Image 1 (spheres, rainbow, N blue to C red):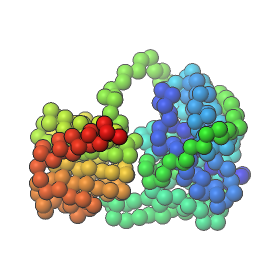
Image 2: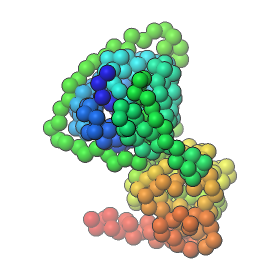
Image 3: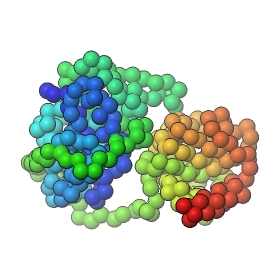
Image 4: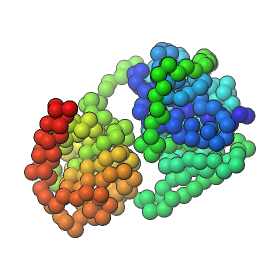
Length: 330
């Protein structure tokens, strides 16, 4: 077994998830010390067109598992496909983005391979031949470090935005290896006959470098318009507190928090969010936190880098207006 690391390239409809490029950097950080190579695996239908983009971000060897049956994610089929790529690559470790797909796929592959598995890592490093993975526990108050033995395959999922994206190198190339999934009937027990998109076109909170979130203080779904406008001006994602989601102001797919989605963007703007411990656990890893709230004693101000004690309905539109001016001028 070489010291190579295989990165799973999560893609949807031919678009690579931004977190993949961050994992390529995480893998490079490890292989620079172990002397291995960063490799990648792309699973799906007609994925050959994605090879150059992955190669440009540092993958030296790319395994493609291309099959019409893999057009949409299915747990059993994708597990068999990635398992075939692992068999061909024989890597030391596999890195997968921490997404709904990634959590499911990593658990399935880990079980099939009897691998050492850690989910939702915030840091990965080496100690000798072993991999050491760090995760958060108890609402982010404790860091847990796990040593994954080199005696077996090491599988980790890594949280988005905890690593910078690997730099793009124009003209970079990679060796391409086509792998057959050899799917069986049991891999295709669920047959997708129709796909209906529920996306509004707004970035998912786990994908945005900037997240603008609203809380119960927005008071209605219509009032979330000011949050969407600020997010659009920043090319960011829209998030919401659990209270806002429970009240029906936004779908739970946008919920940030311990019972929602954990985010670590470069900039997190909390509008009308007091900062319950469950919410703080979901966003306190953000690099810069801005809080806008009329309650100066709100817990959100204890973790914020910048705080504005004022009515969000007055401040947020002003921010949006000024940002649009800067964007139009630049």
